[in-house]
Length: 525
Image 1 (tube, one colour):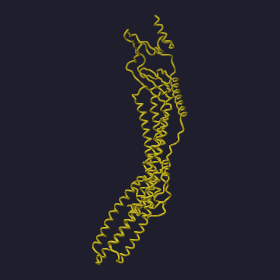
Image 2 (cartoon, rainbow, N blue to C red):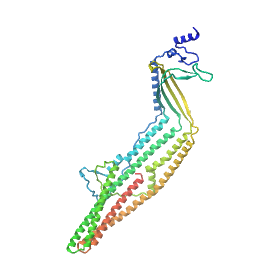
Image 3 (cartoon, one colour):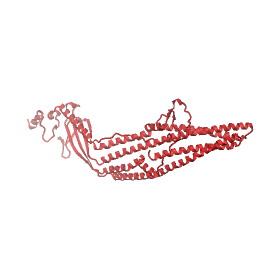
């Protein structure tokens, strides 16, 4: 027996030996896989070791996450703005508005201004959308924090080869010009991998976290701004409906006076004491007032529908405004400088704009971080096997664990990084300019709001005197007309003057309350 036969026989009887110069598990061409297996290991112990290793890695990831986690405050919704004096708080009542009765008054829901404001803060869709932005920004913070936390994953792969895998460098078919190769192993291969990475240095992690924090703060300010805007719109719409109801009342009173004048004119015409032109003039006045009543009624329906939309009430639900149109108490009006200073301090939209340059600063740092190196710690545990005829239960499962460090340094990106840095700096300049422009526009808005209140206050004093004078003039003219001293034309002019005076007073009250609402909105209240 030659030396090769002896060595081959020993390799079959002693599994601890292997051919020198070749790795463990190497099989010469033509050898069976069972003839060159290493020392037997118990399959159950290998699987237990694999499972214990997976559990150890998962425990390491959990400990790392707990150690790196920062306490998170729950996302709190900003409190709705305090209710401002509206049409319900008064010292001088105009008169309750007579609204047209709804189709089904038994099913109508009374709605006060306070209830409308409360429902709007709870159910308004625009406010809900702004609230969801806060939650979205909160999740963005979670994503930003993940840049500093470890990442782990598990992968597996199974393959079936129709021919044995090729390995170059082994075999006896090589020549001077060609590299030898051989086919070894099994046709069925299986591998499972557990990998873990931990960032040691990521220049974009901190700026990304700071940017997400500022974005969340900005979203909270935008929610407050939306609440202020919706509150002002609810108060303005509620006021408009009350004023329309009051206009209908005044229109009905004017219509009643003109109808009575038409009856008197017809009676006098029948007695021969009046001209036909007086009857025609009275008839024309009555017919001119009737379309206005219809227009005002439709305007009330539209206003109520808009109010239900703002308050989040079902459009099919009939509502009746329970408050009346009243004149708020005239408090001390602050100066323009005081109003401006308070507006800059409290307006949520300006606060949101003031945060934008800081967000842009972090964006500049993020863009600059793309030019810096990053360092990560990596680890992997891999188990692989080869078998025949899918007999994986009767196969070896050697493992290949390793740990290491990974460094990445960008060299050239086609000038994209420099362009992103310049873009972020330009965006910051835009934010600063936009904020300065908003403050200048605020000065004009403050002056306009204060001027509107002063003008409406002065106009109310004048309209009160004019309304009282017109009412007294109409009473005197009506008395004189009843005694045959005044003409029908004088009575018509007196009635028109009274109607105009009442409408002008109502308009002055509306303008004053609207100016107050606009001032509150300017102040961010």
